[in-house]
Length: 249
Image (cartoon, rainbow, N blue to C red):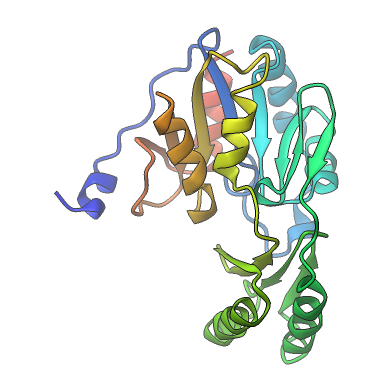
């Protein structure tokens, strides 16, 4: 059976048993719909309430693992989740609120400058600075997709930055921990240690998370369209993911 056939056969996940698991959630495309611009994603009462209740029911075994900055995660989730891995794992805030992060790569300044120059060609191109990475979004300028990929790859080759391709975005980030590394780190900490991990995410940036939980006896849940993945289960989209999480409470 091909990878595509395996993916197409992914079933919906069973109901969560919150007393047994540690839950790791991506943000964009999982807890919140993808927006045309990153800044367009805002707090939502349903999501905020859900996360507060989940955190209590899980006795703290809840973490958000996102490509966004820590500040942005807290803004969107209204500070309801303490344990967060931000910028794809380069920043980690532990269950006690202590923050550790990688040192920024010296090539970021050149990447910001070159992405800025590239973005000047189309008003739909957006450059997002994240401190430890810089992202070029082309969702509003899809005709620039191939040129954006070429630009990002050239910069990665020149600077040594890691090229993190995403959904309508090319991101150059400081080499270092991934989402999967963050999951592994959390699983060494109380209250996560000893629980069965479940990782929920939507795109290629979440594959490291799916792989990390699979290696420790857990499972991944893919959100959104079918694609080759290490996840074992799938839900159709954000609304289905939220409903599945709510049903566990």
